[in-house]
Amino acid sequence: MHGGAKGSGGPRGNRNGNFKHGLHTREAERNRRAMRAKIREIEAVVRAAEQPRHSSHRRSGRSASTLNSENQAEHGRPSDYSTDIAMRICERLVAGESLGAICADAGVPAKATVFRWLDRNEEFRRLYALARELLTQDLADEILEIADDSTDDWIEYRGKDGKTRRVFNLDNILRARLRIAARKRHLVGLMPNQPE
Image (cartoon, rainbow, N blue to C red; front, side):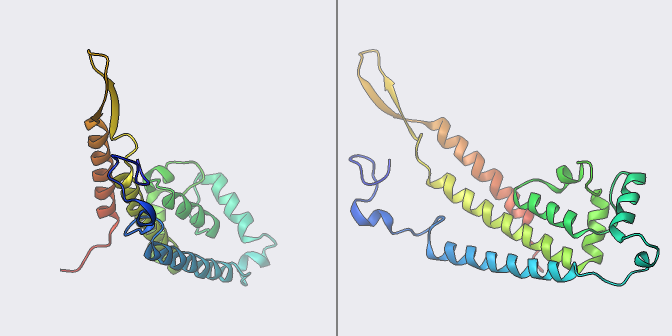
């Protein structure tokens, strides 16, 4: 219960809105604005990279995209770098999918190809790093939401005497701990290695 209801332990009145952590703090809002600015900056780089370039494919009368689609039809998976595919991969990473699950789908390059793209393509490296950074922010926000959620911490229980009592719901607390611990472990795996 929130809002200072009797017996809830929550702050009363205006004190309920003074957030120290969570989604609506000034710092969280500032971080989201910075992330949106980074996304706009990377989208501008992507748009600039998509400008037509002179290519030997133009002389043959076939466009590079036609050659790429012919290449995909022969081999099943794209191997040449594509901004569109790179953006789709990064969007799915931000949504929480693993790279292995993304690369298992048809029409998406194998993990080895994605790693090659990361090694050879600065644009994709920036997109991928931003996707991982956004995912870490999202996981951190989820951890705070789970920790702050107290909706099922208490359950009503009717005793043998017919009286209704509120009892502590240990299952809900343990489940919240498990969810937080899993997200923390995933978050640690996403963090860049710190030099010793």
